Length: 172
Image (tube, rainbow, N blue to C red; front, side, top):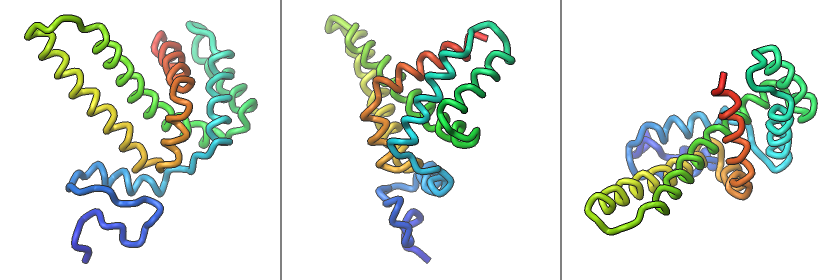
């Protein structure tokens, strides 16, 4: 038996960088086997899918309009429904983390003064920001370091799409 719970055991495509017994790390490493690879072409197709979906979907028009938008987006992107959903899950995970980090950075920028309340709030925000950065980096365990590098390179565009999709889908 391995001397450590998270040893690689020959699975070199997902390097073991864990030094703790964090079970989410083990889950991520296991789920990595089920995650489809993301390359630049697949990311382009996912962005095309989301852009087309947003262009076709009309807020407040009901589920039929969203279904038509989904069908049109699949046709435009060339993705299968499974590829679109798996890729969208990755983009939601990345977008959600980056959106939270961006909001925390904005809040830090708004804080003025050196009072005790501001100092305490600044420390809490910085702690949460570090957590969001760590959680973003942890996406590499599940989706691969190359995938995370591709996402980070297009962060501004993906964050804008994430925000628009969230707005559309949460308005009802």
